[in-house]
Figure 1: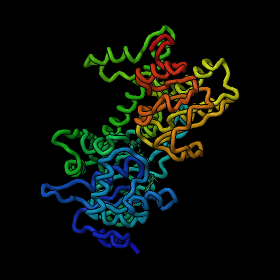
Figure 2: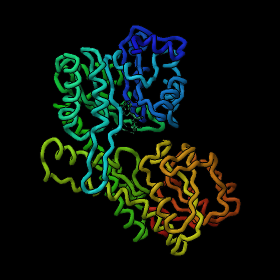
Figure 3: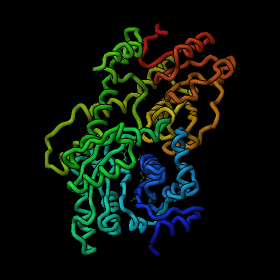
Length: 483
Ligand SMILES: NC(=O)c1ccc[n+]([C@@H]2O[C@H](COP(=O)([O-])OP(=O)(O)OC[C@H]3O[C@@H](n4cnc5c(N)ncnc54)[C@H](O)[C@@H]3O)[C@@H](O)[C@H]2O)c1
């Protein structure tokens, strides 16, 4: 039976205090973006301090989707994260009774607004990348079949420029036609998140600048009105762009810029190592120039769901929607390739430092997520490191304070950092806060493995302490003679 009211849905889910009489916002997809968005929207308050919206997170009825729904309905985050404020906001939503989750798509029938936060994978991450729109089309169709007249769809998924115009709008229109409704019965807008999972997860949504555009002026106005109720727009004003294609492009361009900036530093890391200087020290010296303050630094590699694929999306949009076969994106494409190759540099350096071969060597890899203080392992460089080192004969043990199970490698990881004894090398790959707090002497317990800092994880004091305890220490981006 179709869901008829928010209160009824909340009631069936055992919410003690189901909220009523507020506009309902559905969030389609409870992944890293959707979960945080659902909580942020549920936490938005009016001037009297009351919640503005009732929020329903909607997932697919598969085991993963059901797990996420169960977690939200039980007041738990579906994924590990270190942002206390996000946990507190989830608690508040539970107390207010204004956030629930379901796999029942009839919930969209309640929605004044639906935020589309589903994934869109890039396939064949090679020369001719492509996107399969089947999942996105189906998701949008569901909205067109059930959302009320006058409601608003905001696509937040990162898509090839042109997608809202050439895929989303036609799919919505065709679904509306089956209901005998005119094309403008549901408004369509694009906005994007710059969400940063980690310690500032919630702030990266509500205390951050947003860019948006409407498929029509009315949709742009409606999107602006919604974002203004959730985001701290007094301090972080919104930017409206001329079209959804422009807004889609802004997201793709800013991520391509960042991926390229990171890739650019890779060759300078090799240079620093070769000539015996510390590139991190140099980068700090350069960053004092306001024009250069976001220059990146050498590292272990780039992972996560965004920077590894977004630089391909403009190329796909140009070909798929605008018939431009000849537009090249050499910087963006090369950046992805360079970033992907980075962890192999660490494998080769560790191999050289261990006498030129890894066969039978025991390596401890500290950090398998793609970013500090985040439990997301998607497309992480640690996966490439482990596969390559093991292909060369090493045995690699892994730890990550935020990852109990590593799905890409089908490995369960220990909760505690394994003792350093018995390892030929310890590789610090991710600058998780927990690694700054290791009692080095107690942990080493007399062992003297090679310590390899692949990602500026260790402080100068830690590197010195390791050396004083008898370990050889080497770093990506620093010559051997550097401290
Ligand atoms: N991860 C980030 O930090 C980040 C930041 C900014 C933007 N983005 C973009 O946001 C989008 C989502 O990213 P993510 O990391 O949250 O992805 P994700 O894979 O973690 O989550 C997507 C979720 O959508 C669900 N889903 C798919 N189809 C659905 C449907 N028809 N109905 C309901 N649920 C459905 C999936 O089951 C999954 O749980 C992507 O386009 C990504 O590029 C991600």
